[in-house]
Image (cartoon, rainbow, N blue to C red; front, side, top):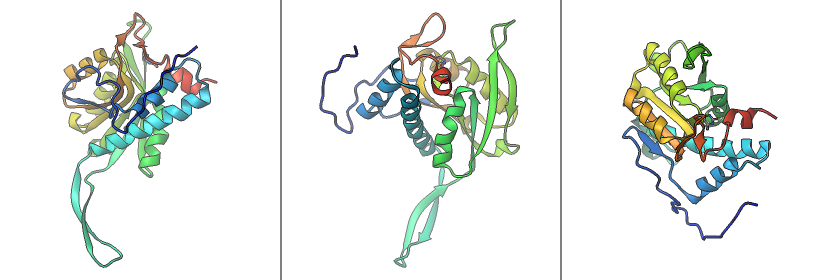
Amino acid sequence: MASTSATLPSATTAPTTGPPLPPNSTRLPQTAQLDALLTIIRDKGTSRSDFIFYSDRIIRLLVEEGLNHLPTLEKTVQTPTGLPYKGVSFEGRICGVSILRAGEAMESGLRECCRSVRIGKILIQRDEETAKPKLFYAKLPEDISQRWVLLLDPMLATGGSVMQAIDVLLQQGVPQDRILFLNLVASPEGLQAVYKKFPQVRVICGWVDDGLDENNYIVPGLGDFGDRYWSS
Ligand code: URA
């Protein structure tokens, strides 16, 4: 049976600060709320519908944080009171790119925040002969080199798939520093690998876990995200 002990939370409670991150990476604020959401999806007894519901909540937090990293321009509008308001507007266009199949789970969270956003897809699978990640399919907006790209994959384990996906984006002319990679749970190994190869790609994680097991699953992790989200 799961163990519980009550603590009085505050909005800024940080249950753990976690390990230091590479300079290109940030974590969501490590609040008790986020920890509670992650605890639900980590629990192997959580039903599929709860897994989807609470993953979607974390995805929404990640997308909102990702949007904080986009540049803005000063913009002044007239309010109904007749006075001007000096605010800002987003500087450039964006698109999402999901790494199939698990990354598709993050598309609706992006659509909820960004109306009519263009979303591309990349399928990378393990090549049975080389045991390395191999590109099987990519469908991307034709003007992707002019956009900021929110790259979506819930789990950053070894980094093999996402690094292959970043290579595809670079080949399409997207500069590294216009790529923001959003994930729910990352391993320190994956973060280091991405930083070493692509130091200008920004990585935004929900949580950073302890490491990888012998099967390259994140530990303590939450198991196979795609299976738990998509398979009934
Ligand atoms: N992908 C997952 O779904 N889970 C992991 O732990 C690692 C990769």
